[in-house]
Image (cartoon, rainbow, N blue to C red):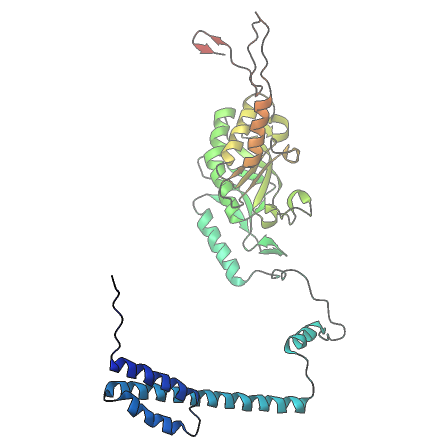
Length: 363
């Protein structure tokens, strides 16, 4: 089928011709004969007024753009001339980047006898502010009210990063229902630590003392409380909670009848005294941020370390990684299998013998 050829009207041809002339005139808008070319629009547009208006509009736009471009070039040239004149008056200058580097390399002059600048973070303030001391003492009132605590208010402690704004000397607790419980020697502690000790004494220590020993505890022997030091007295370790008066080490308990229960002597023995120590140790794990006993390390074989370090969950002797390692070690120990016909019961991997059953009773 034969395709139909496109048809061009006279108006379309005139429009295309007018725009072509417009492009030529815009390119030579500054020529002296530009006015003569402008008059040719009327002949090309013919009797179409709309086409004539469009061509005139586009021509004016091109002339305006050319005028603005000429003004910008003139401004840039004048600005460049000003800068060159100033640089010639000041003499040769190094490039901007090089000048800044040279200035940074030049050391600043220090006055004679000036002390060397300290490295690292700024040192902590030398004393607590009055607002911090007041806030600490108000916190003590809130924490210790209702605990029947016996204590003396101490001056604020500030030794570099160590100390606390409102320390107390904790003498003991007296609720009126039981004999007075005292600390020997009285620890220097924060009120947060004193509150935890009061909760532990009332909810854990005395109930288990009555259950296992048949009498309450009247004295707690302490080894250490506030001490500005790092952990294990090792300078490469982190600062200890003892440095914030936020920890107490306990080594001994004395009952109302004068019986002494020592962590060093009775932790690993069998009997009620050992059961009492293990029970109050496990109860401490529910109250304090950190509880360390003889099972934690040789450094704690003679005392319980109790502190109020803030943790997502309390640390009881071992970190989660240490507990997993201990469980894996237990699984690798083979169980002892008794000889055929022997009456000796099998010993499980943890080393605890199975109780021998007789009828419905367990020995």
